[in-house]
Length: 111
Image 1: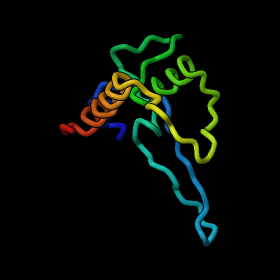
Image 2: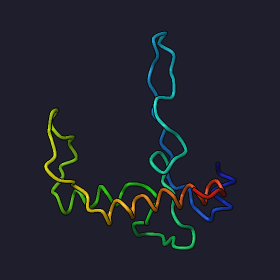
Image 3: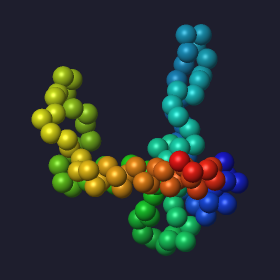
Image 4: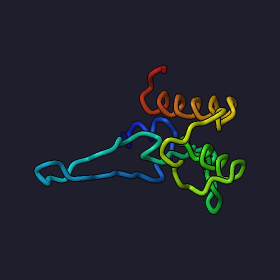
């Protein structure tokens, strides 16, 4: 993975792993790893110390929900039904493109 991120001209800025215990009380990995959700990748050519960096994760969705919708970072109450989509199509497309670009740059394969 790290070798791929060098070729992709990305900076691996953060790496998150989540663990739990199985039935035998053994510690096991319980979530995905090495994806834009578990890692924060920054564009090497755009990196500027001292400022927020654009990343290939879902941060733009969080930012939108906080600013435009007043999201308090709590999940909806169980049974909540949406009357309309929360995210505008343009934001969904932009988020999808970020994930696709990260995939293609890290794997060298077309999505």
